[in-house]
Image 1 (tube, rainbow over the protein chains, first blue to last red):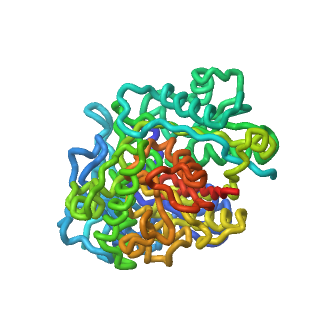
Image 2: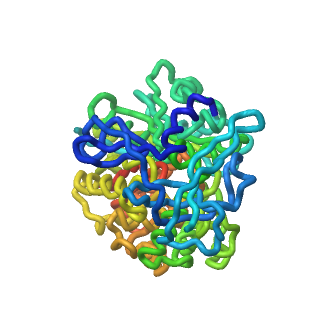
Image 3: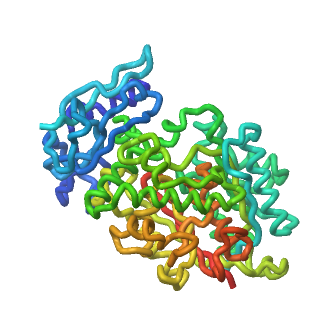
Length: 129
Length: 383
């Protein structure tokens, strides 16, 4: 992954920066240029709360080449306290004991490696609390 | 808009076609369609393909296929809407004829998936690269998340999902163009290798090569050729958020609901008028959810309906995926939407052989891209 592409997403992946619409207060993550609710175009930056609950999940047994050495790993859709939903891995979990509605917290982790000579790519993963 | 008719169809066999190149597959299907229609020329053509750039490092498919079909300088356009590329290709051909801009248009689709690319990675480009795929999720994984939510919300069972695969393999065993012509048992499905819990290998459509093409023509051309029989009664398309997590519900596909509403209105039909439906069963759960969102069954009852034979060729109140669907016929991504139209064309013409539905007059094709972020629906009617 070219570093410029990676760097563009750092505010979201490292710091959970989202945008709040100045007109209707809808929160978007990642930030958008047009509010999906009211079509407003002015926003302020907010930081999402890092706690939420697990809505649904899977355990990936067959990964793409980049993740093939990580399998099996859990990926779920989390609803954060702000109402924002994200897709993320659920780390350090007992794969047999995951369940809908579990409370999770986002933590900072390495997500992937860009080949042998490329950059290390970081971001958020969820852990069950 | 004026009426448009499907007057010819042709496809390659679907499967692992090691000796066939992407261009030869497309030309084979296109020539069959042209010969079937009996036309001496076409005015323009569309090529639906999801990702020939990733699968075979070849883009610019419009010009390539026009070149090898021997029709340059005729206009030829590549259209892409992930797994809905074929359906959108057909819609473009329909719109070009219906608008009066052209009289005879070829709508094709093709994908060459077995030439060595990382297929899981290539298919995942239909999802959000930065906010879904970055985290390691795969396409089976995204549909697995939907499946688990559907099970949790409506009590859909593992066996009900498997019933979709069993039915589609049974139908596909009667289709000479299908990739898998073998039946599978419920037991085989629920014991097959786990891909992404709860979806197993036999819940998933395969990796396939293949091409398909149809000829869309104006009423005047269809009449002249004595082929004024299969009318395009509706064409509708809708979009949804690219990322699954951005949607309010994980168990309803809003693009399917929206496109279906438009299609039924345009055709002047209701769900109970549809006799046969080709739906996008890229995974068993997809057929369950789509059969609900098309209005065939109440929300949450799609799995039960499949398990009770309400969608089967033999006992169905609506026959779903008589071709074998993506599951058994195969899923060369860009060709799929066109192959669905071909199944309807054959059924409505009474030429579907061992899988013929008696007195089939009205059929629907539902083709979707990604986790349902694109959906295109067509209704064909035999006059």
